[in-house]
Image (cartoon, rainbow, N blue to C red; front, side, top):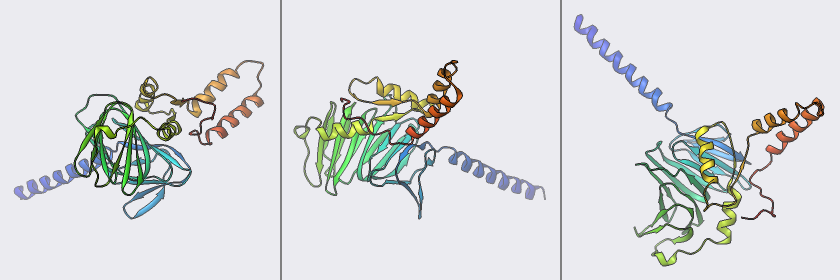
Length: 280
């Protein structure tokens, strides 16, 4: 009887440990959606659902944006991923400060990563190349099923083609990688107007309540290599500032409410749109 009780206790203990590990695993999610415009879909297993701001993402999730739609994913300990319109990618591997792998199927995505020493890896796989980086700002575009393009704005990125040939971009520039063809340092060219315009369109951020996210925005803003970055305050910050201004006697309650409604309406518009008169 005594041995039976001991065995039962061991079984229950193992079950409790297993349950605890499952809870810990579910709490280890390190990615979430921080910005969305238009129609963005999350494909998880056999189910598809509309992706919303604040949704947590996990390894294996596939995200796709429709035409005139964008999405932003914040990966804890790594940085920010911005999906352009008509883009599809998979979070193939997702581990904070360890190993993150993005599988870009189509479209283009911009990556703004933390500049910090770490033993982990961050790689982006496209149909024709793998880009491995540590602390940088760059964009990967799938121009066709047989051609991809990597544009570096800041930092460094090692690009490897499907033949295993590697070229390191250590200064701003871009490189096209075609299936079955060699690549070399001589193929690296200056950033094109298209690549600069693509970054300008995506490098507009909205602060939120995540301290690490806001810290990364300050880091991006201070970079001399990335010009034209626009960082806006959150809706709550704007309303708090408005309330402080309207505390003065000359501004009435009706005016304050009208201004608040205007701010809320404005923030629902696409903040990725930059006025043509702004320079890069």
